[in-house]
Image (tube, rainbow, N blue to C red; front, side):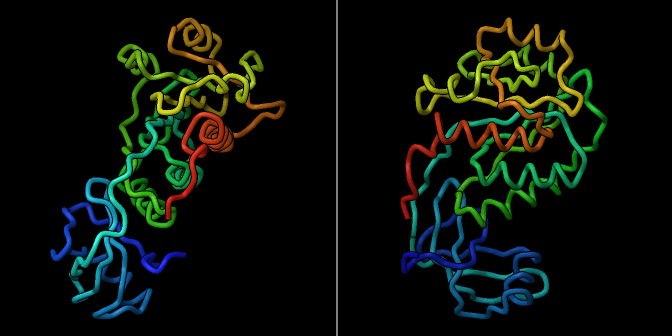
Length: 251
C-alpha cells in the first residue's frame, strides 16, 4: 500500500477540490463515528468520478451529518471501460449480490430487461445503489454505475446504439465459446453483456438476437449456470480478454 492510501473510502458526489470542504450525510457520519470510531483529524479518502480521489480530514461528526476538510488529490479522474450488463431481474438477495460484484468487476450501467420467461421481481433502485456505493468504496473504483429502470427486451433492442457490441450468453450451446469470440475485440470498444432469465431465452428471442448485426452469441462452457453466476463469469471473461484486466493497478 502507498503512504496516501486510506483504509476508509467515501463516495462524495459533490465537487471535491484541494482546500475545500465536503459534507457528509447522516449515514456516513454515523459510520465514521460509531462504527469506525473515528474523530476529528482522522484521515479518510473521498472520491467521485468527476474529480478523482482526495485525502480528507474529519472536521466534525454529528447526528445529522458531518464535514471533511479536503487536503490534496491522491488520484485524478480515471474513466471506467464502457461495459454494460443486461439481465433479467432475479430474486432480491441474489440481485443485491449481482450488483455488488458487477460493480467490483467494472460495470458502468446495469440494465434490467423483461424477457418472455422473466419472473416478476421488484427492482429497488435505491437499495441497489447503496450496494453499488459500498462495492465502489471497497474496490477502489471512482465512478458509480448507472442502475436503469426495467424495459422489455424488444424495446431495448429497438433503440440499441449500433456502435455498441451486444454479447449474448446463449445457454443452448449454439454460441461460440466466449474466449474465442472475444479474442478479436479491440480494447475500448463499447460493449454489453446480456444474461437471460432462469428459464432461459425463448427460441424466438434467440433467433431475433442472432439476426442482429451488433450481436455476438457466446457460450459459457459445459455447465448450466444460474443467472448471477453466468453474469459474473461472463464479466470476468470479458475483462480478462477484451477489457481493463489487460492493464494493471496504478496505485
